[in-house]
Image (cartoon, rainbow, N blue to C red):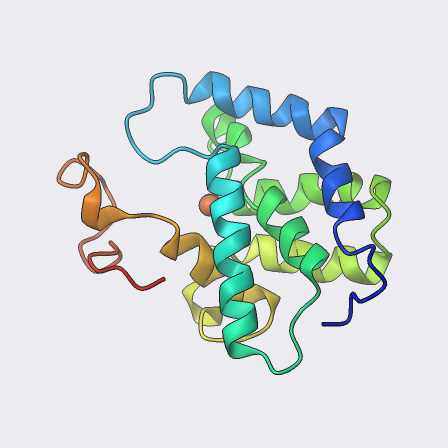
Length: 169
Ligand SMILES: [Fe+2]
Ligand SMILES: [Fe+2]
C-alpha cells in the first residue's frame, strides 16, 4: 500500500473532526430521527469504509490508499440532508460538499477530484465492477446493507434484485 509513511489515517481522522462535516452529520441525524429504514450515520460510513478496505486488499495487488478509501466512505452520503430538504440526488449533493472538507483536511486537488468522482458515482451501476476507488465504493456501499436480516425488508423500496439476500462479505 502506498501509505507506508505512517500518515495514512491522519487526513481521514481530520474529516471526522471537521466542524462542517459534523454539522452535516447532525442534519442527517435530525432528518432520520424516526427513519425505520437503513440510516446514513457513522455506523454506515464506517461499515462502507471497512468493507471497501476488505475488497481493496482482496482485489488489488497494489491496494488503493487507505485515506482515499476512508475519505470517500466518510463523505459519500454526507449530502443526504440535501436530498431530504430539496430532493437533490444525494450522490451529487455529497460530491459537491466533499471537496471543501477534503481540501481543509489536506487532500490534494488531484485526490479531491478522484474521491469526489467516486462519491458522485456511488449509485451508478455502470462502474460497479471496477477495482478502482469508484467500483470499490459502489460495491462496499451496497454490501454494507444486510437486507437478509432486516426487519423492514418487505416495506423497503429497494427492488428485489438490488437487495442483498445472501451474506457476501
Ligand atoms: Fe448513498
Ligand atoms: Fe451509503
